[in-house]
Image (cartoon, rainbow, N blue to C red):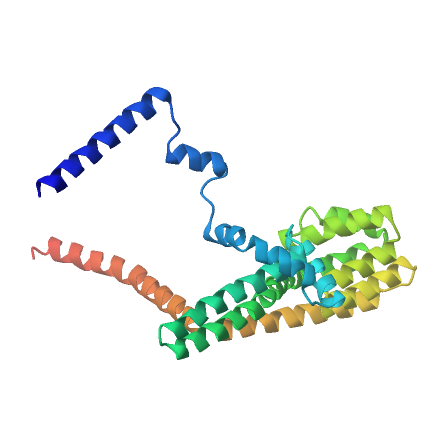
Length: 292
């Protein structure tokens, strides 16, 4: 017991001397070293995983079997989402993460839990499949926001292009009132149309977005660029887009009946309260006047 107390006292003395020496000699502490290594703040869990798997990611990036079409499709999606990472790096990291999870799952065999190892390997495969799908889901959400803003743009276009068929001027003016999702695409389109062939710029925008509704609009605008009167086609497309947008909103409302019922219930109680409070106050005043 005396020996343990002596060791504890020696440890406390050593720690005290180290603290005094660090303060006198200005030796940087752990927090200062961490800020020097990470000037942007403490790295997130995803950044730490990227750092840990970097050697395996580099190896897989050089030998990853992936088609050029998939890389081209992902490259377009990355550009639209503003991601700086290359598609091959993204897929290599996704595969490296799945391999790491699979190896972790194999360790459960040594612990005598083979069924948990199988579940972990399946989970790793699902993680790899979900990585590419997550990019497509983000692009689809972006496309839905663009398609939601499309009817208003086509309505404006229908009335504006009757007297003036200058597409660059129209997009430049409409960009000021466009939303964020559609605005980014219009910025690329305007710059592309100003520096090159207008019809090719429209077709490149159609390729980037890959929407059926947008493809119909691009076909009409190519006709406008060629001098063809597309007034009737724009009117039909505008009516069709308004109908589809109403159907989409109706389906969205039907898919969330609980929110509608909750909002209706709150609104009902609010209206009842608005009518009941003055009535109750009137009854209380009447009772007070009669002496109750």
